Every structure is written in structure tokens, then in C-alpha cells.
Image (tube, one colour):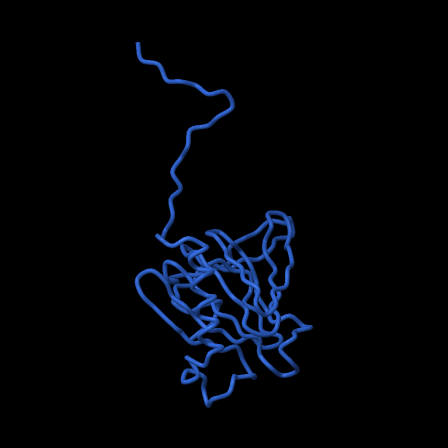
Length: 185
């Protein structure tokens, strides 16, 4: 008779399925390198008019291939991304200047954190958050906050959410896009 060994208190190990061969640590390394390249002036030619736009959020793709999209995003006061996820993509970011505020859905409430120049964050599948330039930004009055973001696989869709009166999360729409953080063409 065949028998299966049973180990008390253990569960069968299930393989983790990932939509990409890249791990969050890889994406953090990629955004860190992208941030350094921006600070070294490698992408100055992408900045419209040679100055960071201050009237509205702005982005430029720094790199794209089958595995990852890398973006430089400028954040200005009062422009929120809305609560959203990145559909089937993992993500990471590195803050170059200023301060970002992130409001993340924690399962029953929004959790808040700030990310200042040099800080990094990664987000797995299902991470629902809203990102905005922090009101007390260290970027300087009228200066945008800058960050580099990486998504793997490259973005194809984003879903947007609202918090219901019952304190749960409800998806309000899903948008097909290859642009980061709710930006439109």
C-alpha cells in the first residue's frame, strides 16, 4: 500500500506563480540605477524645454523591453493618482527629490507613509494605493517631486477603486494603458 508521509502542522508547498521573471529586488535595483542616470544628466534631453514641468504631472519612458518599463515621473501639488493597482504588473519606485505620500489599502483601512529622496518601495500584485506629492515636500516651493518607477511585466492595465460606506474596497473601473500612475496621453 502507498502512503504519503504527513508532517504535523505543515501544508503542501504550492509553487509561487509570478507574471514576470523579475523579482521586487530586481525592480528596486532597476529604479535605483534609473534614478542615478537621471541625477547624472543622462536623460536631460527628455525634459520638455529643459526645465521640469511644474503646472501638471509629467512622465517620460526611460526604458522599455519585454520584461520591464521604466518611467521618470514628476509630481506636483494637488494631483492625485486615485486609489489604483497595476493589474498584472509588479512595481517599484525610487524617489529622486522631494517627498511622496502614499495611501495604501491595508485590508480594512488606508495606511499612510511618506517616501523622501533616496527612499525606495516595491509593490506586489494586488497592491492598491494612491500617490501624491506630500504637502510638506522637501523639493522646494513650486518644484516637482521626482521619482523613477519600474513595472514588470510592462503595464497593460490599471484598475481604480473606491472605499465603500461599509469600509470595503470596490473596483470602479479598469483602464487599458501603458502609461504609469494614472497619467493620460
